[in-house]
Image 1: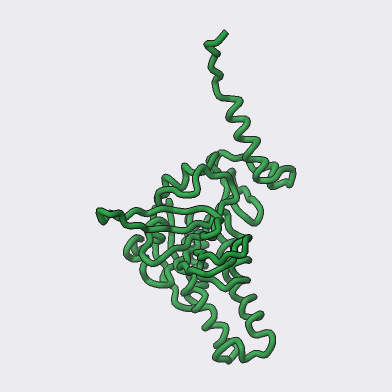
Image 2: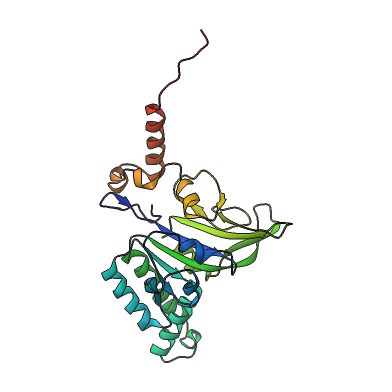
Length: 265
């Protein structure tokens, strides 16, 4: 499952996920549940949930390139980037040093455009070098106006607006982790997959619910049809859209189901 155009590799659908949420809302713990997952850790917190041999610590541009090179030889099923906020900072530091400036604004008119192109190229490279990638970001609350002109609060990833739009175009699923505390003091962790007035997100493929428990099992079972059982040949060839393919598959499944004989008449 991909957002920028479905791909099929040896019968397996690849997926790009963008996960965001507050600090300590279960993001990294959730990512650690994915099979054969290696993590590019930019904040050093992966050690609490990932085995040491699955962690690639990244604190600058060189270490990022070294991590990508190593992962290309390992070929894991999943590559996790945690967090994008620190990754963007490290990339920006490298770009400014390379261009001998303290800040991108020192390059008149085009400084930020040049920086944004470099940041996007780096993110795009990670997303397209590996089959299944999850980017993890912190969240921010912004004030927007809804279609009626009323100001509302909306949660979204901490990301520059134009980069966020580009990033969204690569993703198959954009989801928010939410932690709540009951009256008895018990913590509840959920995954929200919706593009609503108050939350940024969504899924390219049909899902059963926009709010599910924050577990890999619930994540997999939430798709109307398992991505691993979806034949993408017609999508890849351009004969059919992803949505139509899912609809067709669902109809085939319904037709194949045994029909009960009516007890009336």
